[in-house]
Amino acid sequence: MHTVPFDTSRAVCATTDPDLWYADTPAEQQEAADICRATCPLLRACAEYALTTRQQHGVWGGMTRSDRRPARQTLAHQTSLAA
Ligand code: SF4
Image (cartoon, rainbow, N blue to C red; front, top):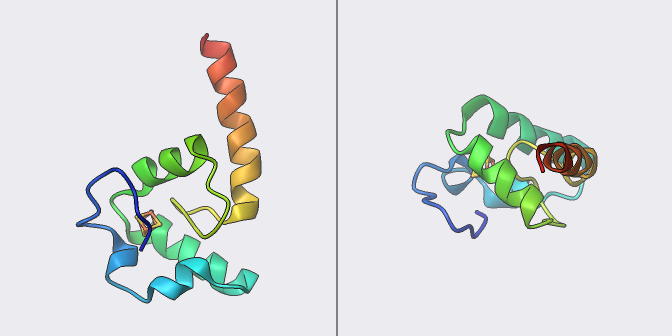
């Protein structure tokens, strides 16, 4: 399970194989991301945390590392529009 600054008592990754969230293969990483999206009530908070803190490893908030790069760019664009 990830260490995060919010209540993780309902984190799905805390009740399943935590290694899946740091898997090496794209298929396993996608499996973890799919589990996040389908079942975790912390999805939004986790995704926001991962993007704002630029997490480099693992699956966070339903996103693999390769998913996060474009998501960070979108977030940065939206933030600049709101400023
Ligand atoms: S969204 Fe995924 S990585 Fe984040 S707490 Fe939930 S299961 Fe874990």
